[in-house]
Length: 323
Image (cartoon, rainbow, N blue to C red; front, side):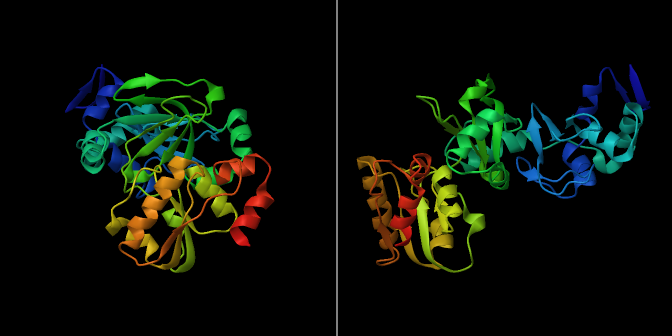
């Protein structure tokens, strides 16, 4: 038995988590924080974000694969141990003596209520990140997308993921990755799979790339995937992306981004499905902003900007977009 206070007797360390508010403990160490985004470590000299805080199986964890001084994963007790250089017993005593750490955690609300009420899907999704391995480096380099950019965009190489509690562990060569949209949900991508390539709890109103936009601009490109958006962004263009070609965000949401641009250019796949979908977006936008939007189609055998880069035809893409 672990008796750290007269009021609390624990049969195991996990019993501690029944009495504490994990978010408050993490705020004590990290200040205000977000989950599923890259941050800097408070425990070492860290020049660039490469760590994260994440819910996994009811616990908050801080993960730092660059940690050379101790454990890679730290729970609420672990971050107090590391922050104050305490033993396990002293860290638990410190936590249980601090009234601001008492209470229930918000894991249930975060993983169920917010996702069900704010998205079109009731899927409960959870994922476990891992460092970018050689498979990921090979995959992303085809599109001239770097690990620095992936980290900036909150793209996580994924070791395993859960859908409604059921765990799936992809093979490393599948290069599975997860896009985190912070409080708006996540999208798990398996680009080499023939079916179920995407699993998400985002909605039609989850628009990617918006944090990179200027306050006002000339041309704004709308595309249909992260890869295409990153390729256009790497070329110096202002762009956003929808979750897929069939989704239309509410105009009240979309207007936040398109209203400050003079022209909207929709660039989807150059197949029948993509062309029809792009024309639908143009009609939708122009019904609210007269003649503001147009669609364009790549004059290539490749379907989208990312595949043009992969085929080694970057200059052809530049000539089409800029001249």
